[in-house]
Length: 510
Image 1 (cartoon, rainbow, N blue to C red):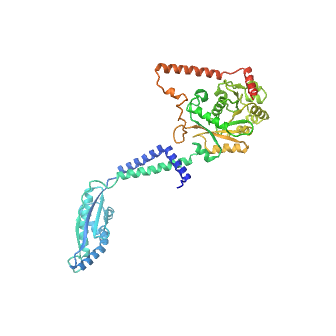
Image 2: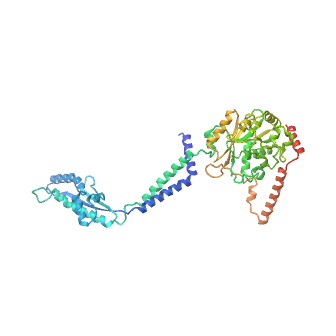
């Protein structure tokens, strides 16, 4: 028997919605229970008491006459039910018990019925007083007996053909019938649960933010070439491959490197790293991707083409006052501003001073020639460009490169923003190399599974081994010293001679 894959997908979507919003659903359900409890506690308890009378025929001695009499009483029972709430019966009850109500008001508290195919009349009275409810039910039964005897006695006769016999006397109830607290609480929980689920579904439908790769695939068929987990300390250590190479986030950048290398492009490989809006992790992604590619033996050039809010020089700890803008306007030679970073084949071209006309500079013939030279001399060129929606810089650059890599921040980027960024690239006929989902939560229904398997062969097992206090202090001190030395080596600015040599090395290694 075949399985409807679409139905399974929809079911998984609902399960994901419930997992994601279970706290809200539980809270609303508890509110429903609380509302039901408040309602139950504020209601006046009501008690019920029931009395019954049996109506029979006392005419006839033969079986046939008795059958006719029974049929007669069954037909008359309906009239007796209505007679029980008539003023002829209730007024004497009110007078006898001294109840300060009218017959119409008392009739609202009285329910009279007769089971099908019987001649039993059942009288049920509901009141806040259990004793009064029983007294009223018994008094109505007594007065109804007298009323039936009176109305059924024909003129000129002394006896009624109908006999009324009390069979059940009402007694005060021990527990109230209203409010039914357990039932009210159950209904409150069900209503609250239904409202909670409805709210969760409505919230998900109205939420336009990109939460996971599923939201991206529902919007576009562009390939997702990477997913970078969220790091709360990303601002403190943006270069995760340098600060913590064994971190799962570092492994995510290596996976992005691998996927990028397998993309099929004609000619050189130069990519613009951009996003739809600011603060989506494009600069940290560009820097770490460049380092990962250089670690794999590639000759990489990283250009800070964000001439509005440059970040590359700050993240890498290099001098960024002179760079791309100075080369484009002819103020400086490329060999004087291109810097090699560390021992890798990684060359950095900072942004330089922020110009008043970034878009014109990036779209100039000088920029096109610069990209052509770099694409010829390096294996991969990565340009960190501004977001697409606020400015057109990235779209201009993407037209001149192999494609654009679009960073999409989970739980931050909206679907309309991503669609607008893709439209901006499509408008200039720029190729989209792929999308990178950044800031992906590591826990919850939208999380990726990054943690498994990293305890074997990656150095984590040694950290978990028990150590003495002296050993832990010694290891921490050694690690801190090594990291400081390595950072100082990679971050130290190089002189003009070394920059010229680095630029020459790019060309020589081509």
